Image 1 (tube, rainbow, N blue to C red):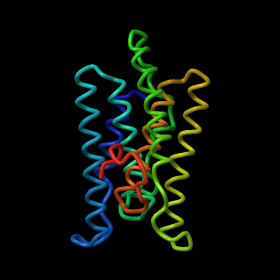
Image 2 (cartoon, helix red, strand yellow):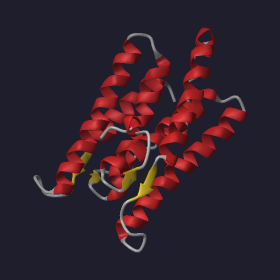
Image 3 (cartoon, helix red, strand yellow):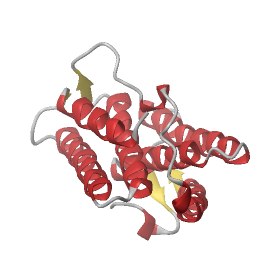
Length: 192
């Protein structure tokens, strides 16, 4: 998928996603925050793309998708269509060769960031509750995308790996913002 198309897809998906909980309720406020974060990452990605920075555009768009899909999975956002679109259905556009060094550095940094995020949180709700089970699911999403990204990285698919790491970190960051995790270390890497 072209990076620009990914940004367009994120904006479309956001536009057809509605907040479920009542306005002013704690979950309504969280849903509004999630939508706001998705919008911010879509806007950031567009700015990066306009400036000719496809690496940061790619990372921003996939991070936004992580937040958006978290909101849908948590049940605080509902999609107007039966099935939300997935940015992972087509190969990611290749970054131009002159930017290979920057791509390599960013991909390695985002892998470390995702692994740090996953190891810096602990489930807040009791494991026997629905919220506890969802917290485990969120952490699983983050760690699964970290593993998948490492596999892609080993195959030399850096663009796909960066997308995977960004997406997984978006899930964990949204989970922290939702109160599903206690931050045990590295508080500065989360948007709280």
